[in-house]
Image 1 (spheres, rainbow, N blue to C red):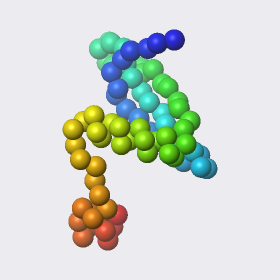
Image 2 (image 1 turned 30 degrees about the vertical axis):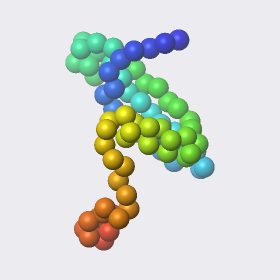
Image 3 (image 1 turned 30 degrees about the horizontal axis):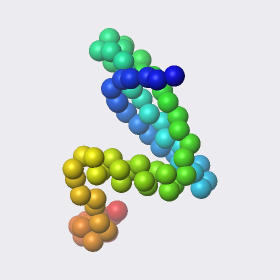
Image 4 (image 1 turned 90 degrees about the vertical axis):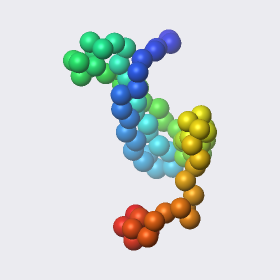
Length: 78
């Protein structure tokens, strides 16, 4: 089954050594106005989640954040 839509939200939960990614999308403006998203859940390893995150950052044209780029505020309250 192939599905197309606009991404409207996501959440994640730790599941031991895996991550449960919950993705919300809508197929139309009407569905968005009704607040009636389609929900998809993916269980993945942390390695898969890291690869997906790196891939999406790369596609966006942004550079990945490095731990050294954190400000003093984030280091204290992080």
